View 1: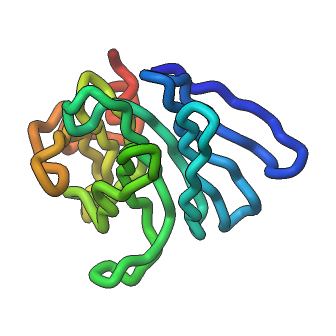
View 2: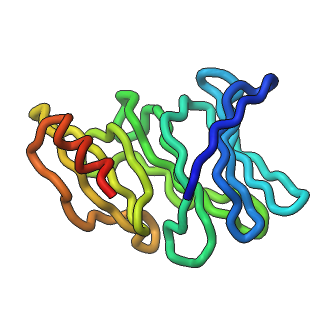
Length: 166
């Protein structure tokens, strides 16, 4: 799924995902700590406030139902992990309304980045000993589950190469 950068004078920087099945998910940045996820279906626009910095935005069919979902990377603390960190939220189009599918607290390691590739979430993660892994996750009914490692116990440069490989 291609992603385009658009500039708006009222809302700052806006990330737009190309439409699929006449729907478009976009992220509108209001300020450093407030973003709005928008879903446009026909003439209707539904919005979901994200009061966190957004570091990543991807779209794809996460749950395999044939419709495009939004994957939003936010920086926030959680109930179980009180230190701010990178998290992944997944949203779907439910009858023209944005609905949360998963608002993840954590994957396996310390999340640096993610991308949606071939129906899976590819994650670049740090380990507690300062090394890196690249892991893949897939949708499993009520959340994501680990599939496999693409790289383990590597440097950041090696992990980035694997993470970005097609």
